[in-house]
Length: 107
Image 1 (cartoon, rainbow, N blue to C red):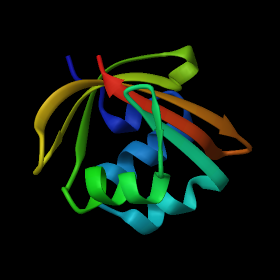
Image 2 (spheres, rainbow, N blue to C red):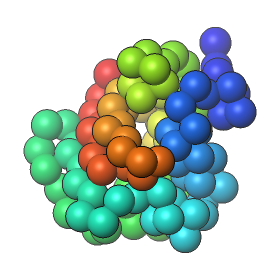
Image 3 (tube, rainbow, N blue to C red):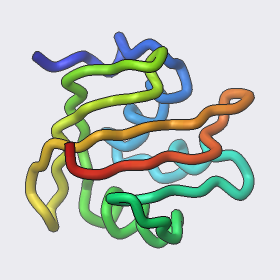
Image 4 (spheres, rainbow, N blue to C red):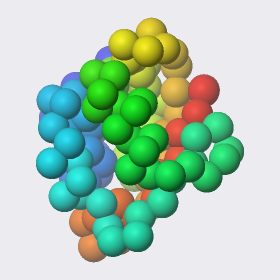
């Protein structure tokens, strides 16, 4: 069962998913705290490079299957034009309405 973006609990995470699905890099970037960090499959990555390559240049899209931790932990089917579709887990750290860190990987 897919959870619609509009029903995601955490407003910042909801806005992040909406920006990803709209392929709106400007909106996505506006949700990041200065110095935000990220990790993919347990390894820290360069956030700007990873986001451009894996999400925006590859037209990434998330279909959220479940959420936990007040809406800051998601399991989603993520697809892009490079890797196809995979089941992924996402965890977001949010402070003051901005994402300070997110971690993703296969679920």
